[in-house]
Length: 264
Image (cartoon, rainbow, N blue to C red):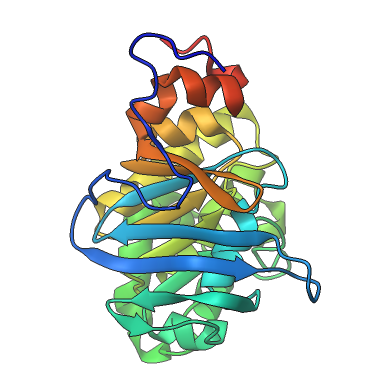
């Protein structure tokens, strides 16, 4: 690894903490998280993440780095063995997902994230099962963000394109008015055109006041739209910085983001 002049605006993260400031007051923090799927086999090995109010944070890195495991652990889907997660100072470590939803945390998984046999409207209703009386208010909010969902409200979700189904999944997660939204690889399996549309919708969600943590395989696009980002490697923080710092940092490109080397 060369130390090129001007290299590494991003911050190396051997200890998991960096100096890149939050965009907004901290609302979510994951501290020294150790977690995994199989007993005594850890996927996460002490990684950290912070999220500011109305901030968008990306999580990128090589395959197997623990990116999806991190968001699943923060959402109560993977057991955290060491460390803790706090939401506005409250310890929410290992709370069940439905409890986190009631506390204002939403999650969109990478796969199986819609009910294909249900209509768009029925999928959105499923997202509001904890507060059905808010249907009119939340339906108006979500379909203002995603007008296509209003137009397709009676259409069976399985007949939509991949990009449209992703909008349904994000819309359903927004029905409970989360302040924090976890997105697990929202562009996976989509055409380039549909990927672009999904990233635009993620920006719209964030601009509407929802703080977003987005795990993403399309590192270039993720870094272009995120305020800050983390690079994970072997379940640990490797680098953190603003999206632009990481996008153009020679060491980060060389070690983790080789396909970004031609970014101007």
